[in-house]
Structure formats: structure tokens, C-alpha cells
Amino acid sequence: MKRKEWIFAGIFVLLLSCSSAWPQATTGTVTGTITKSNEPQANLQIVIISQTVGKEYKTKTDKKGQYLCAGLLVDDYRFLVLGANGDVLYVNDSAVRVRGPNTTPLDIDLSNPQASRGRAGTDADARSLTTSKMSKEQIKAHDAQVKADNEKVVKMNEFIGQYQAAANAQKWPEAEKAMQDLLALIPDTTRWEFYKALGDAQARNNESQEAIQTYDKAIHIAQSIVAGKAAPDPRNPNPDPAKAKAGIGQMLIAEGNIYVKLEKPEMATPLFQQATADTPNPGLAYYNLCAVEFNANKILDAVNACEKSIAADPTRADAWFFKGAALYKGGPTPASKGDTVAALNKYLELDPQGQHASEAKSMLETVQK
Image 1 (spheres, rainbow, N blue to C red):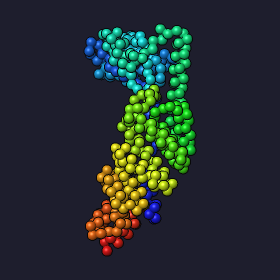
Image 2 (image 1 turned 120 degrees about the horizontal axis):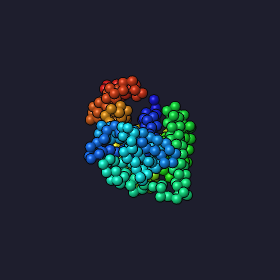
Image 3 (image 1 turned 90 degrees about the vertical axis):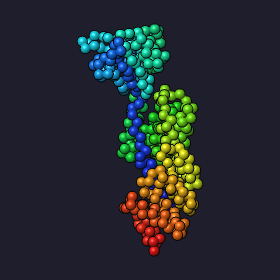
Image 4 (image 1 turned 45 degrees about the vertical axis):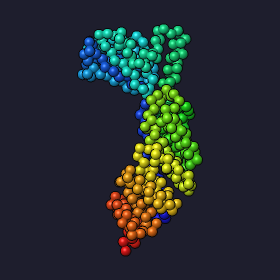
């Protein structure tokens, strides 16, 4: 195998695991505890009714009086608590507003229903919409907006499902189209994961420049989340900075791999270097950096990067191979001979049938003569 081909051993490590599985998180959840005089109320039925389409969701409290109802579409809801005989123990006056994917808290004290209504979650209490106080025109406009929001939610989830099915079947043109349709529906989203998925599909379709542009946009959005400067997004109200930071590292590696394929290692190197600082698990970034430096004949830099990759993940066999190969390429000295042998033997121990096994054995024979 030619040395230039060795770098590609790690290129697809990330890409093969890049098909994200997103929950249908554009719906919301209501959860809380029902008590009476501070005693939890078990086995009470809860009925949550959409004020727009009349759809009902039902659940029950557990022995601790706790309940949870997930998968509620964007809407305002009437909330009822029923006793064992079906008698109504509680009904809310102000609508409980659900705006997914956040969770709306609603604790209820049956001995003091008025206080319960006041605690319909700080979010619901501050933003609740009491349709009984609205004009007919306002109610009509409100219902039309909620209906439009729900239709958008359904369409979003449809596109997500199409992407996941296509990605699982490795039908990347179909996966790309699903993401393009999704992002056309919500062009101002802060869900950087959607742009990453589009970039992954474009990369698989050998649309290198398009993928680079998409990754750049996704990285910019993710960086704004990490910095706490992301624009408000009702469909992503609580973005996770830690996940965004990890995503930045993954996308930098993916973009660097594209430049490697384009035979532009000078463009890939700074991306891999940045990725080592922007991911909680930098082993892959250091490994790719090691391979690029190796092919650029920067022996000391390659060894250094491989050692950092090994420190982050001692089980990455190819990092041991490249360390040994770099030491061998630099010309084994009495001082480096032992490290060369140890690294190549470790590679063979971890991956005895690996694609570099024959090269490793050949180098070992030469060094040990």
C-alpha cells in the first residue's frame, strides 16, 4: 500500500457514525406531582385536552403522585384530574401552553386548587393564553397559528424520518434532499445538527465544496450556542452547549477529511488542530493530524500527534501503527528502535489482521535485524 493511502484509514471512522437519530423533539411534555394536604395522590387519571383540535392525552399518577405526559403537539390545553369514580377533582382556568421541546411543569394541590393554577409552571403562568378573554377574531387567528405550527411540526418530523431511513440505507442523495427540505421549512433554526446532517450527506455524495460550506454554517451556529449568543429559536429553546462543542469538533474533522480527499493537506491540518481543542474526545482529531503530518514528512510532528491520540484512546490501533511508521520513516536510532518496535507490536496486538499488518511486520523485520 502506498503511504499516501495510509491516511484514509481514519477518514471514515467519523463519517460511518455520523447518522444522528433525533427524537421527535418538536413536541412537548407536561409533568408534575399531585398532592392533597401535602399527601401524594396515587392512581388519579389525568386528561389533557387540546383547545384547538380537541385531541385528548391521558395518563395516571404513580404511587408518589407523580405523572408525565409526553408527545403533546404545540397547543394550549385544558387540564383535568379525575377521581376513581370519574368525578372532576381539578380543572384549570388558564390554558396550559405547550411549546416543545421544553417541559412544562404543573404541580397541583387538590386542597388548594387556586394555588395550583398559579403554579402552572412559571413558563405557563407568565405566557398562558386564556381564550375566554379573547375576541372571536383573536381566537380564530390564534387557532390558525397553532394549526400552522402543528402542521410544521408534523412536516419536520416527516423529513427527519426520511433522512434517517435514507441514511440507514446509505441512500445519500435521498438523505440530502430530506435535509434540504427540512432546512427550507425552518431556515432560521439553531439546530446545528440538521446542517451537520446535510453536510454529512453532501460529503457522501462527493459534493465537496457544498459540504464544506454547510459544515462552516453549522460550526458557526454551534459556536454561537457555546458562546451563549445564539438567536432565540422556539424550536430549540434550550440548546446544549456541551453537545454543540462536541459537534464542532466532529464537523472540523469531517471538513478536514474532505480537504485530505481533495489533496489539500495544508487546509486540513489547521482544522484537525482546532478539533483537538473543540472536542471532549480528541483521539480521532489527533490521529488524523498524525496521518497528515506523516504524509507531509513532518516526522516529529507526526509522532507527537500520534502519542496524543494514543493518550486519549490507547485502543486506537492505527495511531500505534502511524507512530511506529513515523519513527521507522525517520530512521530508527538506538534510542528510537525500542519505541518503534513497541509501537508496531502494539498495533499488531490490537489489530493483528488489520490493513497495515503486513507493513508493520515488514518494518519489524527490518528494525530487528
